[in-house]
Length: 217
Image 1: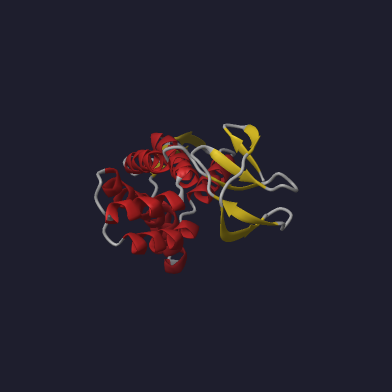
Image 2: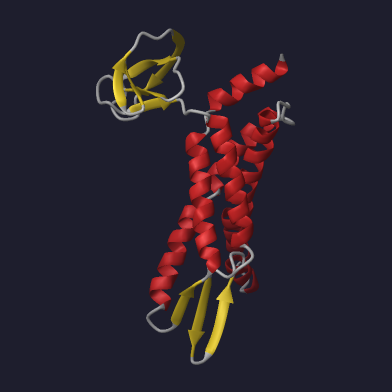
């Protein structure tokens, strides 16, 4: 099987486990190899990345999660967009979209917007921190399996990227008949989304379970 270390392809003999993995591109079945830090497993047929092991996965994911939480707090302190029309100005915060739907009687839609743009992203960051920080301090997290399960449930609901696209569309549409300005909260919100995505990318589930086994000893 072909592996890469820091972007350089290498051929290495690994001890294989009994786990099998199908390539997401060509469906070729591979055995899951035991990788070292910085290595990636690629499909021998099409070259697609099958699995990878990041260096310092837990520390990097924790750093991104804490950074994302800081930017989330900043994103809720300042307005996202400001509107000015006929001498009247108005600013909107992150939560104002959900409140506007609820005030208009669309409680279900307002609740979905509130959960996907505020509650789910916040809970994802908090769970990552409460899961990874105790391990960094050589302590066993509280209900680690429950937190991992809850994190997998919340990921599809944390649709901050879609919310950013909605803001961009609103900015383009409203700029035709009003003066629209980007608030400082939007920059913080984009940085929060980026930090959350990077936490996802660098987090290695296998590293979490291995670390939990070490802490149990």
